[in-house]
Image (cartoon, rainbow, N blue to C red; front, side, top):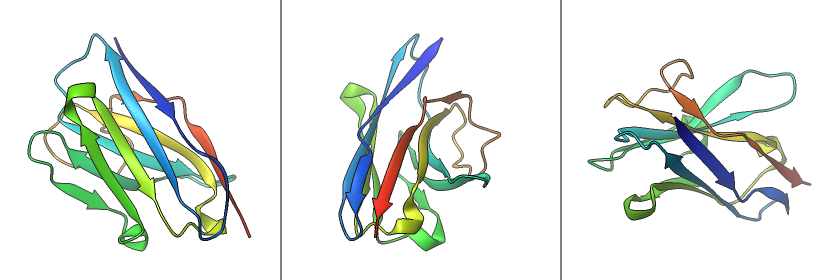
Length: 124
């Protein structure tokens, strides 16, 4: 069983920055792709960013390109999400996820494991 443990997040003012991290542990399978999703109250969980573990290829939601950056520390089995120039509409619960496929998926269904989710609140 794989566990994804998230950290970071919290409350920040508009224009500020936060960094989320997500560490994979347990019976760690070969990681192919890790991604971040978010879910605002009353809305569906949506794609934020993803990264292919072996070649570093990344993908971002169009609306977040340029403000959010996904990166990895392979030695620590950890993925990061740097969030800059935060806006109140970025307020949501953020989840990391692990996908054992080599393709980057922007929907939730292909992801096999999920972190517990952490609230990020951006005040205006």
